[in-house]
Image (cartoon, rainbow, N blue to C red; front, side):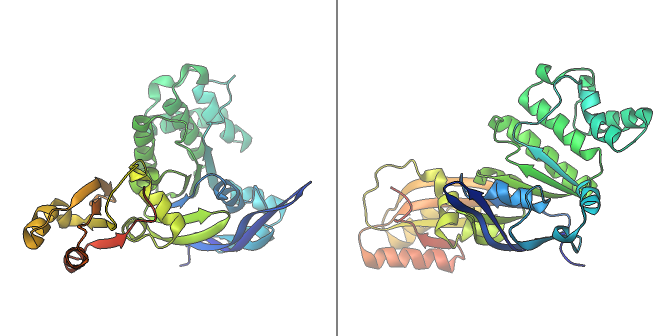
Length: 336
């Protein structure tokens, strides 16, 4: 069985008065059924254009998008509308109907689909329970917090029983604690309902929290793709390194020629690595930055170390980390 979404050499060019803008350039990747797939990049990377190509809200200028083996680009208008019913989408600003209460907002797509009002209300109440808002059925959007509004938007999308859920910067307007709760809800929906989720974001923390695979976009091109663990441990391109290394970009001044980023996971995240290497080499190192994250339930850590001036000792330290199967890369070009 093939991927649920196949992006095949997709490009999108916009025609403006002052010339053409190539927003997406020859992008290809697969998304497997049941995956949580992240598309990450800084502003202007082409993320939102690409996600709108996935359900053909934007028709690609070149290439094709396949969903369940069918090319969306070749469907008739009626066939495309039917296919879109199984592709839900949630946005940064919720897009709720302000004049309708929460229950009626969730009923809205069911009404459009011709579902009886009594059945629609019953399903809407079930969905409210899933998103943890049973007590807000009669409230209006203006009475809700940002996190509650996003939960209503998620419930509304689930009303059509989608196979795919596209999240375009869905947590960007929320505070960190609310973001975490929404991401946990999406994870739960993915696991319990088997819905494939595509997350568009500029925040590495969102990808690390929820995604299993990720594609890195920069200026409309696909820079690299793979598992989140691979990206975190061994970013191969400059665009990926910028995203992964933003956590210590605030370090303003570091003396010493050589600085390395060391990544570690699993049991090694709990070993006294620095203590051991100081004893081994009998020379101190300077820890400029350190952090531990949980990615897919595993402890994943990173440190930026300033090595001693002695090339011999610095090389010995790097070799020590490699023998311990830790990720090591020099980062002098990415910090400071």
